[in-house]
Image 1 (spheres, rainbow, N blue to C red):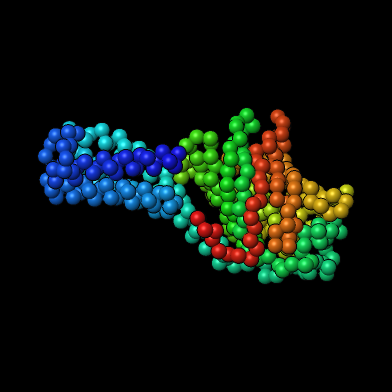
Image 2 (cartoon, helix red, strand yellow):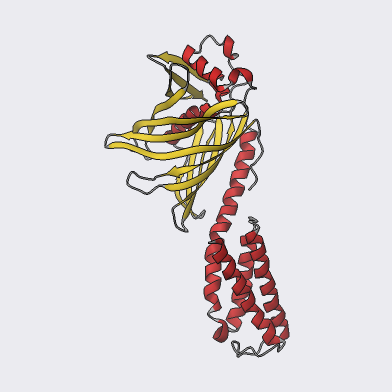
Length: 368
């Protein structure tokens, strides 16, 4: 796809060179019958150079390339209109370049919006000023949770305040749909119990989706845009989305397990090797159940979560299975997970993910 776009830009650039040659009578340009003045000839040359610059930025993956592409298309189309009889078919290439540039422009603004939100995330006030107690001093922890935290490296590593991580995997939007690969970046302010998650989901064609989930001060938001331009889902100011985002944060403390000692999370031992965790943020409360092996290995997380944010959405069982573990900076965490909705009509496994990279106590952006 990238090579094809490059060829289109290159061909279109050199087509404009014909206008310059025609104006200065360089060779016989039979494709252009109308006379072109020398001032306009320089504009045709400028357009050639502008499209070549767009090509250069495009292959360097510079995020601002679509701005120059749109400027080149505007100038090019103006020249085509002036020589419409001879150059009208160049409008087709301009249209193609426009259709490629607009989603890239939407992606640029989507990224800038995310960067502003991450900046705000890092600056959030803490909802808990300190952990409730050190691991060995915390008498409220069920013994199975204590085993898990020891296994995870909590005793031997510093408390985590910020996290950034990269994910990849695949997802489905409904049970009978095809799997779609995705790549995602997630930022956490652990002490403020907040996160921002952004993902690019490919549908197996030029069509793609940009998604963003976030939890800030106990309020969740979900945004999905087709081609970075057209909102497909835009949910906020919704109690069901809020609780779902909080339950997601609670489940994901397995990636930064010192958060289990927070004052905002309380624990209760259950039968077998299970423990219930309750998370409370600004008066809002959610819960979930962590299941462990006899040795304190985290096996799964389960909660009753709203299946969507619609007014008639009902709570369904949301199940996360931990498939594999890996050590990052001294913390042993689940790096592969499978997420399933357990519905009345049958299980719907909708997401499988792998953690590729984790940075603890870093509030900086990942480079584009």
